[in-house]
Amino acid sequence: METLEESIQIFPGIHAAYNFFEGESYVSDHAASPLLMEVNHCHYGRIGWDLNNGTSLYMGEGDLAVHSAALCAHSKIQFPLGRYEGITFAIDFSVLQQEVPEIVQSAHLDMQKIISSFCRQDRSFLFTTGPKIDQIFAPLYHLPEEMVLPYLKLKVQELLLFLYLQALDAPEQIAYGADSTETIRQIHALLTENLGTRYTIKDLSKEFLINTSTLKEVFKAVYGMPIGAYMKNYRIRHAAQLLLHTQDSVAVIAALVGYETQSKFTQAFKEIVGTTPIAYRKENFELKYS
Image 1 (cartoon, rainbow, N blue to C red):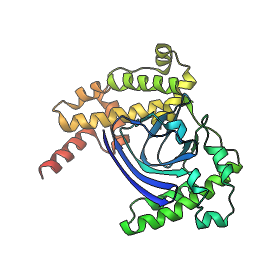
Image 2 (image 1 turned 135 degrees about the vertical axis):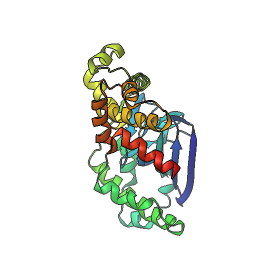
Image 3 (image 1 turned 60 degrees about the vertical axis):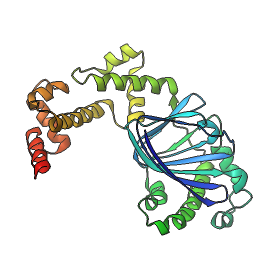
Image 4 (image 1 turned 90 degrees about the vertical axis):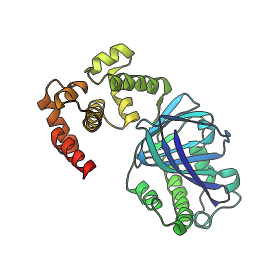
């Protein structure tokens, strides 16, 4: 596991961290403060929490997750795609209520409304990607060093205004049972470790004792794509690595990743990579030795 977290104090009671993780999972261990709220924005990859209330929360690029620190203390964080980049704001309302930033103060926000809506020990919240979230977070990535703190000061206040308006609309929880997400991870392992075998949704539903609609819904929530599209992409990306790092023929590689014929494999490869397997291998070989 490779991690990088750069923590920055923005205001009293508010910290930000730029996060970079490579690996499958990470154990988070911090105090379970009921007045500490974590707000996470995903810039790249996917991330999920197995929370202390028995649910799991997953988000992908552009999404925003909000929960109390009491929910994620001593929890396991998952990275379904093996990599994650994003920003975390940690907001301690026990401090913030005593020293409210200027813009937030001028809006006369009722901090208790944000606290009662989002600092809960029974629920977490997910806001899917959209223009309002993008407006807040997009400018925060790839800033010149001297602009990082000024932008963070501006944007965290915009974030608080956004969350206050969301609290007024009674935000909806989007989470899944931890047992369901664990089953989906087991299904993912079976599929990706046996690329030469084609499993149907019905097969998987029977073997793992999970409803077919739940299987499809939770797989997409965890891995960000419908199961069929995800596996097609996974097969082709794995095949691309085999083309570069083995001397196996295209026909052999096609069979290894679950395609009955070389022509079907070539068609799928071209749809995803943009070129044929033979051309891909030739282009990368020439690039390597040019």
